[in-house]
Image 1 (spheres, rainbow, N blue to C red):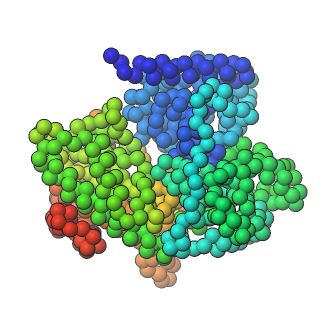
Image 2 (cartoon, one colour; image 1 turned 90 degrees about the vertical axis):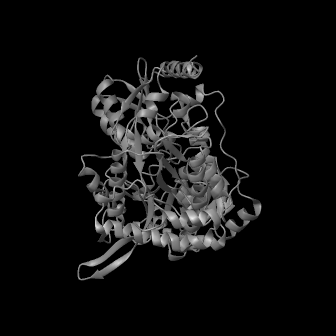
Image 3 (tube, rainbow, N blue to C red; image 1 turned 90 degrees about the horizontal axis):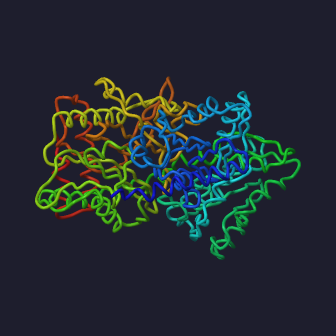
Length: 609
């Protein structure tokens, strides 16, 4: 029996309904991006339109529907997942090289006839993407229409806006008060010649106002827009979300709380002399269209995006504490896992998720996971963004029998005082020489980047090759970036910097002290296994002299890297020295926080090699 037959039939019916709505509006092609009015990575249920229409549950992808074609554009992280979830739906998977690719736009420019109309909801279309569409489509005689949301017409049970209450980030964990943050932003506005600034990105808003919410899974943010003036600021949020006493406190500080749906009218009523600062990569086309023609537009990156990427010394101290709590939780988890495997207990990928979350939940300051745990055994580990489900997951051990191979575990947590993200690979049963070689090559890449020293201001994408070099030397590569920025008790993925070839080396990607980045090279053998080893690292001063200031990385993550899979002959002496020093630091920092089996496990797994 095909248990997916009904869902696939439902997907086909939704696409048919969309085509009927398109025909009624004379739309040739309808585009559904993975986006909301805030251009978030993780979307509230109301804006999960691409998932609802296609059945593909990956976090990134674009659907395009015409009268006789439906395509889903995904990058290499999701090729296998998309091809698993879409058969029988009438959707063709279109493989692209990177998440930032505009190949779906190129496809429309090539395949749509002159006079065609492409429709997309302008409320969820970034201004930068709208410009890319116009640049590519207009020369081919294709018109762009953004004034409607066709999904809203056919999505009968579409979820409402999230209604979770907004809370204040406790003063002890927010060392910079919001008045000072707004002063910093206003100084940048003045320097740019702007007296107003629109902010729509949720992590920027949460950071600026020292507020947190629960509107988006895994990210402690809330749905809002902010319009910052030189004297007062307006925060547009759903009515009832801000408790009265907090609203009063905000108002006394020059921050007016107004209904979320008033954002567009506030823009439309800006003074005739206004100069509005916007970030074209972080604002939707729909909101940009609400700004009157008489308003002078200043385009540059949100000042808050740069400011929040540079953690203060106090914030870094809190993050180090979060890493200690997280490492202690992981020691407890692994101290359970290894004996349980040896006993042949029933353990599935779902068990891993449940147990690792439970271990973190008892640690001080825990809020939630920072993303959906990836626990992939063997072939599932080769899917970089794999997620086990009740319907589809692997059994690692059962009834006294344990499998053989590699278990990849990528997980993280939100604490009131920091955000964590870590990947470790565990050998299960017997591992092969090829698996050990892949593991060691990835470890070499991670260590090479960890040991880097580089000039302050180096464009972060340029560091990517340091991690890839040992892997490239073996004739292997991986499709994702090596590292992403990480927020402070905020989004686990944060810009503007990133160690990835998929990010242009623009000025705002310059590496500065206080930035936190992941370091996570990998090797993936489709259908066989995957290896990824990940730590979070902090930019700290290294040295300075006649050639300027140099930075290096402080490794923040505290958890042993399993040495049982290492092919020692592939490691250089300096790489072995780095690993032994790292393990000594992990043991020093975590030993006071664990006892019994967890302490014994920690001492064993941090022995020098």
